[in-house]
Length: 78
Image 1 (spheres, rainbow, N blue to C red):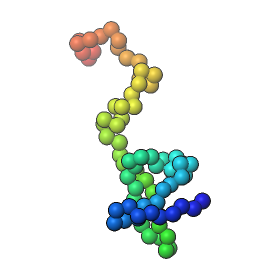
Image 2: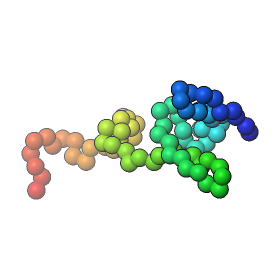
Image 3: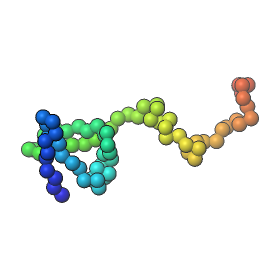
Image 4: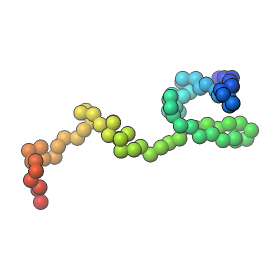
């Protein structure tokens, strides 16, 4: 697969084909890191540790665990 570098401001940009981007988990807004390796360019997505907000957004009624003590509210069980 090939692509062409295009001028983007004072820099150059390249487009990634959708199947390639999906395979490595790149989507709009993904932060990338790149470096020169053996005369070529190595590009990969930055793997960030998820924030608490990121994790909380993934909670759904389907993936929540059941309450261990559903009938106890306000009284500690010690």
